[in-house]
Every structure is written in C-alpha cells, then in structure tokens.
Image (cartoon, rainbow, N blue to C red; front, side):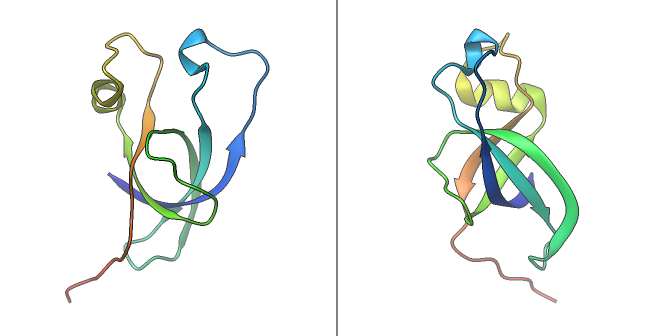
Length: 90
C-alpha cells in the first residue's frame, strides 16, 4: 500500500467504459514521514477523497480489481482510505 496526497483530478472525454462515472485522481506519493517522494500515480477514487487529503492507495491490479468486484477491469491503482493521522514509532 502507498501513502499519498491528492493533488488533482483527471478528466477525459474518451475512455474505457469501466471508467464511466468514476473519478480519477492524481496522487503524489509520500514517504512514511509525510514528505513528497518525488513520484505520482493515477488512481480510481472509491472513498470520495478530495484535493489535499492524505490517502491510502492500493497499487496492485488484482487487489484493486477485488475492491471494485470486477475481475476483468482495466485497473491498477485505487484509493481505499482517507488518512486522519500518521504516527511513526522509532
């Protein structure tokens, strides 16, 4: 799983039918400390996350397809939670 911050949304006029009525979010990856990791990914929103929110993302196709319940979905990444707080035990 990946910790990330929502930094935008993607809009498309032509896409695979699976993506109809689904929100695609641009997610900046974060380190465990909460700083930007310098990478991003695009994920389907399943929790109603908004810009600036810290989220938990599954970036593994089979697990993501299990969340939506469609074994043949063209899907790799999905937002599965909004993070309230992170704590590191050192």
